[in-house]
Length: 337
Image (cartoon, rainbow, N blue to C red):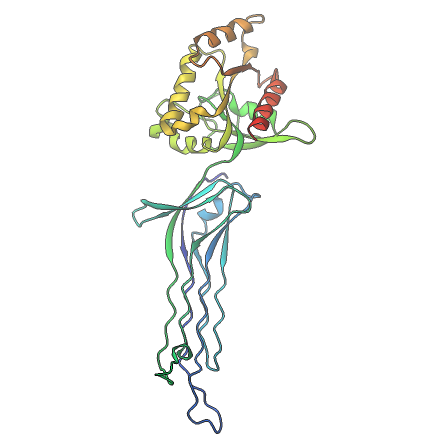
């Protein structure tokens, strides 16, 4: 199951108490202070894991705690530090600190590279033992410190899919069929709207060496940027796609207006999205009369406000022009890299 949202709590470990102790040996009745310091509490640390692509594990485990530091002992023995706890997240995870009401306070991590890691909650410092407080004016201090509490944070975890190319379009435009024919992904395909309710990722093989990652984003509808039709949940996955493929059903009327509606929804959500490299994919060309394809494409091209965007007509059902689309997308990605 694809899960792209979770709330968790992280607690840094408590620091160990410092020790109050005095050296007691035979023939040394009044030895000096020898209380050791406590160990630091363990941190809770986020790690990137490219082998996972969902937050489902955080549906079941929502509380993570660093290990507590051990107390210091006599004979200047320092306590052992608590164990750090590592939590693994998929690439594309953004982590926010939130207050008890669920309002975001700050972004504390953005896991976008496989080497990324971030401390989510620091462990408390260990308390100092009385040996530390020895001075020229106080040769027998009794003072020692208790260990500090670790940080406690409530976190909101959001997964935004990272893909080279994202399929964007209205429901039932054929995006799922397209990705299933271009890659090994197997999203649910049916002839009714909102069949796809969860994003799907597939690897598109260009040749034996080269490939790119494609994401099938669930259908966007007008008003999506205001949350209509689960719009915000879907739109966030478009943010990290390098290339956007606007997939539209060529048999539908007023495709120029539909394309502009899609762009407006993206711009209303995040203005920079409409400046991404993009293509228009006119799908379902197998459903129009033979010999009329050029006429259909010409009408769409003439009515578009953006005259420079490239249009590629395809049939996801029959495979017509899918290789052409695949190579064109790869060429753009390669240019961007």
